[in-house]
Each structure stands twice: as structure tokens, then as C-alpha cells.
Amino acid sequence: MRKTFYALALGLGIAALQPAVAQDQDRSIGTVQQQPGRQCASMDVLAQQLAADPAMSQRLANIEAQTRSFAANPTANRTNAVVTIPVVVHVVYNTSAQNVPQSQIDAQIRVLNEDFAKLNADASQTPAIYAGLAANTNIQFVLAKQDPSGNPTTGVVRKSTKTRSFSSNDFVKYSSKGGSDAWPRDKYLNLWLCNLGQGLLGYAQFPGGAAATDGVVCLYSSVPGGAATNYNGGRTATHEIGHWLNLRHIWGDASCGNDLVSDTPTQQTSNGGCPAFPHVTCGNQGDMSMNYMDYTYDRCMYMFTSGQSTRMNALFTSGGARAGLVTSNGGTAPRTVATGGSYSLYPNPAASVLTLTDATSGARSSATSVQVYDIHGQLMKGARYDASTGQLDVQSLNKGLYRIAISDGSQVVQKSFVKE
Image (cartoon, rainbow, N blue to C red; front, side, top):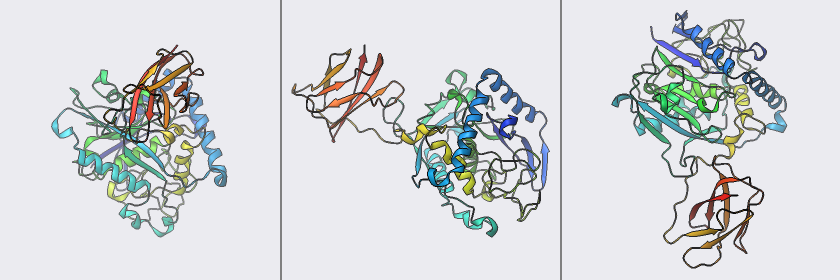
């Protein structure tokens, strides 16, 4: 019997939010057995997070309120814009086999983009009664091309570790504990690939959790072409990113439970393997076992619903918990500095105005655009550049260190300055 576990790091178990509690289970077709101790471990993680951060409950409640508001106003809130999320993949490996090659990482991104756009070939297998509910979520993924400091990146961080296997204790997310530190969550989706113990396939952090641990962890062998039999099609990442985007398990982690989505049928519990359709429970017309948020084999899950799409998209609107990703430049490659493209700025430190000049000719800068960012990569819209004078007004900025990007259409020069 194959063991498959999807553990949830945060955000579940709060009665006011009609929670779903992560369960670690032995699963085959028609069987659900509890793995001793694992359910308690998940609740321990939740209890520890809530105890450490008393404000988390309110944040989760606020996210649910914003989601309900979004879903209640479909005309006002819907757009056809595609949200493209920059992804940084942290490959944390103890052996060479765990050092996932670039080809499999590329394949994982491709699977995610197909699954979230309903372009997966197996979408055609959706039963007729649910075919009209299958949705393109308008969410896509790209490996990061720019790191938090504005430097070029492949979007893959490789970290050798002495740790043989990790658990759901989030150690994999800290360099100090043998893992790899998260990149800013408002700019990137952090995806950790590592060796997970205790039969764990993956786990995710829901919106509202701590920034340092925000992201998704997947078993390294669950990527396309990996060694995890029946779970090596890349759907573990699809499932876990669903959680990261605020989706619950389809059965609501309770007998005939509530997953907070109106168009997913109520079902008694999780399905494993590749169950024949229809498997009728809780008075439905057949469990939606082919939904990415069930527990079936990778080859037997192939759809999100429109309601699930709505729930995920709520995160990207104004006030949404992941709205920062909409304007992230993490997926845009920084342009390299052309030969001779050298600028200087003075005075530095500056109290109110900076003057830009070409360091070679001494002439005033004719840059077509100048943008200022803080140390967290946040664009400072209050800093205004006058191309006719070559002066940058920084009077409205708080004291501190800033980065300036000067672009004249053919090159980008990056400089730093201090606002005093």
C-alpha cells in the first residue's frame, strides 16, 4: 500500500473559518487508515503556530472575509488578466540523486502551467457532469529571472545539506538548519524540493502565515520523471500550490466536510489510487476524485473548478493576501549594463535632490526612465526624476539605503544612494 501524505503547515483548525485539518493517511482505492501520530503532529504544528503568533487567527479571518467579498461580486471583480508568479526553486540535497536536474525543474513548471490553465492533456477525461466546471485559473508560473537584489538568476538555488531527510517542521526553509532561506513572499513563490521523511509527499503554507516560511515543500522525486511511483507526474506541486493559494482539501478534512468552495461536491473523505467514477458519497453524483485537491494518483487528478479558481484569484486583487505578486519584477530579466554606460549621482548621501550625470562625459543624464527601490525591492513612487535637469527628487523618502535603476532604452545601470 503506497503512503501519500499532504500535510498543511498553517491556517487550518480554526472553527470560525470552517477549517480543514491536514491528515496523514495510508490510502488505496476505497481505504482510509490513520497513520499513528501523524494527525497529532499536524495539530501540534498548528497549535505551535497559533501560540507563537496570536494575530494569525485574525489574519486568516480577514482573508476569508476578503475572499467571500470577491466571490460575491463576480462582475466587479473579474478580469481576464493572467497573473504570472515568479518561482524560486530551492533544491536542498543530501545525495546526488536528490539534486534535481534543470530538465525536471523545467518539466515541473510546464506541468504547473498546463494544470492551472486547463491545458493538460488529461483534462479531456473529466466526467461529463463536471466538465462544465473545469476551469482555466488564469494563473501561470515562471522561473525567477531576477533575484531580490535585482541581479540575474536562473530561479534555482542549490544547497547541499547534511540533513538526510526533512519533516514538516520547516527546517528546510532555513539555511541555519540545513535548508535554504526563503525569498520575499510578495515577489516570489518559494518551492523547496528535498528529501522528505515519514512518507511525506509535500506540504504548503496557507496565506496568512509567517513570511520566513511562506511557500511549498515537495518531495524531490515527485517532479515529472522522478522516482516516486504513481506520484511522479508533478501533481504534488499542483496540489500543494493549490493550498498555498488558499484551497482546502476537497472533502474538507472531515466526513462530508466543507472545503469552502460551492461547486465542488461534498464527499465523505479522500480518495486514493485511481477510483472508478462515479463513487457516490454524501448524496453527491460522484466524488470529484479527479480534482487536484483530492489524494488520487498523479495520473488520476486533472482539474480545478471555477469556484476554486475564484478562491485563488481573490488573493491577487486589492487587499488580497498575495496581491504583491501581481507587480513583482522577479520574473523579468534585468538588462545588462552596456559598455561605456556609466552614470554617477551626487550628492550621496542626499537630503532632497540627487543629480545624475554621465561619468564619462560629465553631461546631464538623458535617461528615459529612473526608478528607485528600497532594500526590499519595493518601488518608491514618491521619487520623481526630471530628465530635462537630470535631477531626482528624493525629499519624500524616509532615511535609509536605496537602489536606483537608470534606463535609457539600451542599458540599465544600477546605483545605490543614502537618503539622509
